[in-house]
Image 1 (cartoon, one colour):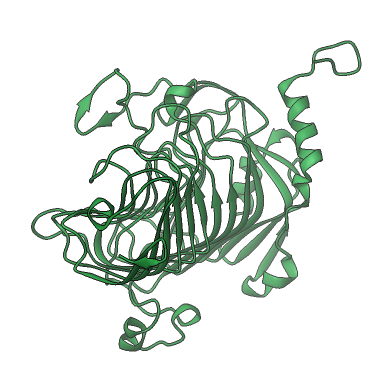
Image 2 (cartoon, rainbow, N blue to C red):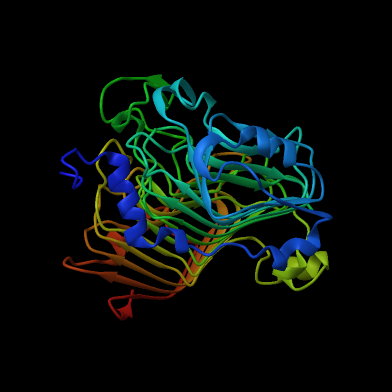
Length: 448
């Protein structure tokens, strides 16, 4: 394709035209005046807004307690991981700020070996389990994976004690480096809360086999170079943390296909709230969670500071609500069987969700299902779980529910099951040991 000057249009030129045509730079920013009251100091960030010079050193100099850092409209480049721990009450907000990592020529696993970016692929690592970050606000940013055919890292990895907020984030393009997925976020103590809100990652991500990444990986304990093995465990859209405590809320997230689960927030002993998310075409479970009781009330969520009132309230357990999970196509690459929602250990509730599966690949725990459980014998059974006021539509023959033998309990009430193009029956819609309760469940409008 020509560029109008007799030359060849580069990938970057095509990409810039795509940004302009889609109005990418009109993504809402965060207004500093709306949040500056939380901070003692406001830094109007003065680094290069053209994307030519790296911002890391400038950002390191500005990052300090009780400081709000404002990125004006522009394009910003990182050339290595930015890491901060133990600081507290820091904000990094963009005014339609586009962030890109430097060029990647060689990558193995989660380490860039050659290119304009060097080192680990966590672009912003803010807190760890041993050294958590304090209060944190990040938002109004556009992470651009579309500028190169080899782009995409873990943009934000945040582990917070206190209040964490990640919002108004857009990922432009497809994550195409086969390393950590876009966001990892978790609260780190029982009285902490992490909110991830209004995130668009519809472009999804590629399996590492479809990228320049030379990594290998394990599946069920065995190395293999033979397809279909080599599941890309860590390339998922939004993930939690095995040390999560307190409350982590994930809402208003739109995500496309990933090699693993688009929303995989299982881990730790706290509760997770997944709300108002649109999740599609993931290579495994569209949403995967577990429960836990190691959390204290959050007044803006629970409406109370009372421990017992919060547990008796609408978010007294891990909750998946008002979400749409859809599988319309089998993505290219190496993927696991696609399913709807998977519940693992701990108390969990699914309510007011829509699950629509256009494809099916077998039945049972390793096959396709609308809602399933997975537990372990002994101390880590799945659940107790409950599914209510939910619709499951299946376009091919498979399980609406699969219940693992290692499940404490699963109750299903006020659920509509629809089969399209095939004849469903109770026996071929309920897999495993079946729910403990099936009440007011319909099949194509008739009692099941």
